[in-house]
Image (cartoon, rainbow, N blue to C red):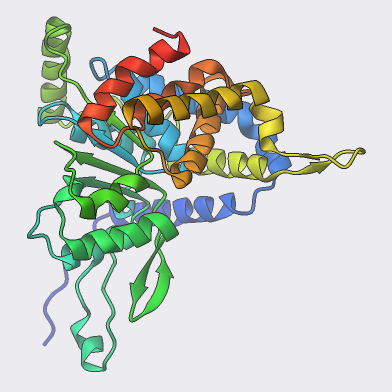
Length: 362
């Protein structure tokens, strides 16, 4: 006799329908052409800017981090949050996810340790298939099936997980029985209390083009911190989420990403045979030379190494910032992203002070 089943909750059909609709909306983004997205781009920018500024009201001195989270999410580049415990790193990610309306089925978070097993992150091995000689992970509900992922203390994971993460970040795939399988990942945010300098972590650190420090704020914003902290605590105790205001969604992020990707892919052949590319339209030669000069200055004077891979990613992030914040060409102020290129806490501290001075923005 089979065990009795628990009656389905009345909300379950609605939740399933909502998830199905979200999947359809996400799939539809990949079919949108440039002209359609260009017509939507102004309203899209307005929604995303309302989203990031509204979310900033629930934190003390965290707007720059929220802005960077939004930029990286649009560009689909991973972001590393650095800071001592108690500086709202996890809370930033949680509220960011809530405000975008990303359902639990599309979200995965985990605090990594050196004892974390790959099965905890990638999914357990299917024992029945293993008996048949197949090495397949049951990935549902784990990282490979999540559209947004938050990995806390990412550098404490072991080599097996680190190797899998490199493949996922680089190629958006993981391996099932030796066969590459696409992952659903769209937004990846990681956090760490400290940035270790072990050589074996260099490759993973390099995948995070941008890293930002969450500084403690109590010295300069003590009263605001008390007010905001009590608000957050009582909202949690009362199961309230006022930051879920519906300004923007995951679909908005994906549409923005596709729009900018199509824009950066455009080529135009002029009558004189010159090919007009993205940098000709949106990144002046003068400013591009300034970017090159700044990178060489930081390498020569401070030993801040920026790999070729990161230079290309930086261009994409600069373009994304320019579009989001002022809707047009890259401007000098956008180069402030160079302050987040450091590979160590010392480099990040140095760049945070030096880059604005080099740009004349302090």
